[in-house]
Length: 357
Image 1 (cartoon, helix red, strand yellow):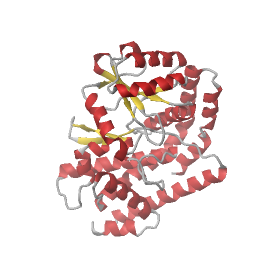
Image 2 (cartoon, rainbow, N blue to C red):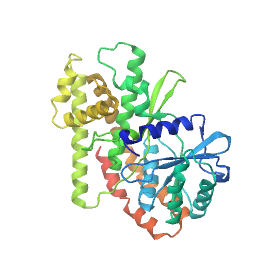
Image 3 (tube, one colour):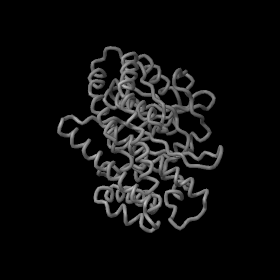
Image 4 (cartoon, rainbow, N blue to C red):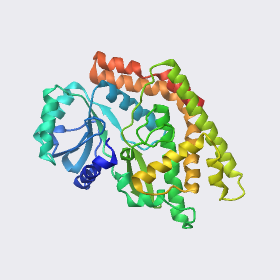
């Protein structure tokens, strides 16, 4: 997805346009019932996404692409869901279904008709390759006032309800950080990766079943291969170092005699300090909030909790890959491009990384 600076108005218009829509099942879709289409620009040269409104105001997401990113995203989605991350379901479309999609998209009215010309150019290039994903109800993280309030909750706040909601939010975010590390996906929160992150790859929803809580939903999942053996070794060692240090810091925080010691503890760790600092800077730059020391503790708790679970995840990686391969081959047949990208998913490396956590 794009960055907050260049896409905020576009994404907010998207959610306003489809605010009455419901998430549609993606296993069997009547594409001819498409009644409206909205194109959302992507960042870094990507093609963005299409939101398609179907009969009964149900909505699905279409992601155009090529074998590399479609295959990697399908596998990443299956892995994230197996790890307990809230994210869209995804399905690879066959060539024949892609043709039906293209026909339906061309016939349906666009929310912004100026986008139709770009779609025609895509047709002329012969691009008939799509993933369909479930529509995640909610708003971009940067547009949620409630989310920003919880992310910026101060150490002095004593409201028990707000504390519980912020704790859950930060722990959930920490869990996603670990899954992104397993996938080598750096396009979200910069805890494990040395970059600025991407605030636009979160959708948040507010649920009020038992008690009001903000649920972070991860979009744009991607499994990124590391091509050389030295790079794989270095990556595992770096992630291991961060995880080990995070566990040590958490243990020290639990043994601290005063809440005021929390900041001193994590800032005193040369491995964890820059990771947390990047996260704090990310939320300060994009949301204008200050992540408190208490909230840092919750983030680290989520990270360690997911690391503990990821050891068991290692045993499922082979099955997740097999499910991905089966779906891709059923949809795309003997297309050598897809077989090449399936071969690029390094199952032994991912298993080793999960086991090392």
